[in-house]
Image (cartoon, rainbow, N blue to C red; front, top):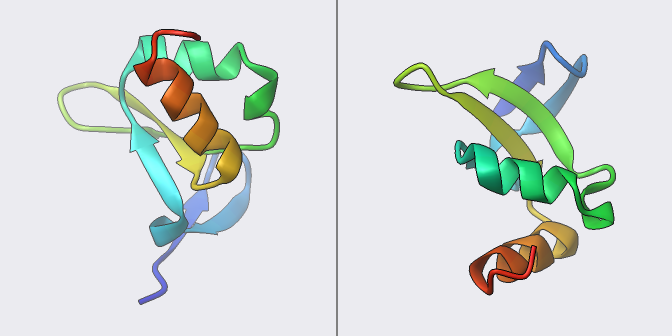
Length: 74
């Protein structure tokens, strides 16, 4: 099922099945600090419990960022 979302921040649509939602600010900071993040951030939204949530493409780059995050290498 194709569920389209619209990013008010970046002014484009994206498929909610093709992204990952990450509320952890330190993780988002580390992702943004890496050159692997170029072109991977698709939205920033308001989440539950007064959190800001970053929306990232599901891609080889974000898979690698996640691996580095888990290995404490970011």
